[in-house]
Image (cartoon, rainbow, N blue to C red; front, side, top):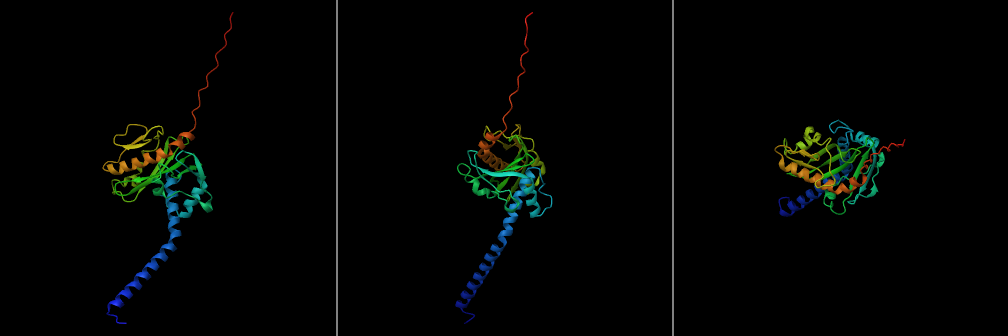
Length: 253
């Protein structure tokens, strides 16, 4: 074959493209289990941080993270938008189940979303949030105390927010600390908000210089907590009615 001809060039290029595609496909297939394991560990690590069980920045292996989750989780399940439990998620160490494709669930929040609930032995209930920041998706996990109103902690992440500004939702522990002790009000919309000059118990201050990221994260929290509202309202502990003292009997003399 004439190595200087067009036919040789086309054949050679085709063979190279096919070989490279095959190699990439094989590599992707071979690495997928490892990628899935990394995603699962990352998701669990963020939940544990929100629940105050293990800080995200503590060096740990994937196996150690899964061990910690199995050791500390009490139950995990899925609810629908009516707040009804529809299925259990396995918490067994050998087969931990998560709902980690939050983007797909975000598109179904108004009808058929699968809303995961993770309850831990320390009394914290953790739920996810997902939405759009300035440059890409933002997401995270919010942990509630056993009253299902008071926020115990939060962890947020992003795909491409501006370093030093919007990226502070992940990088600045002081921002996440603002959520601790605040309370969501599931009887109103939004149940919780990020605003400038926060003055209410269900508000925290926006990040200075990151208005759009703050608004995006606030909208994400509002949308997901609205979807979870029926579950939280229906399962919140009922306030005990005060017991009245019996009236003292009087006798006539």
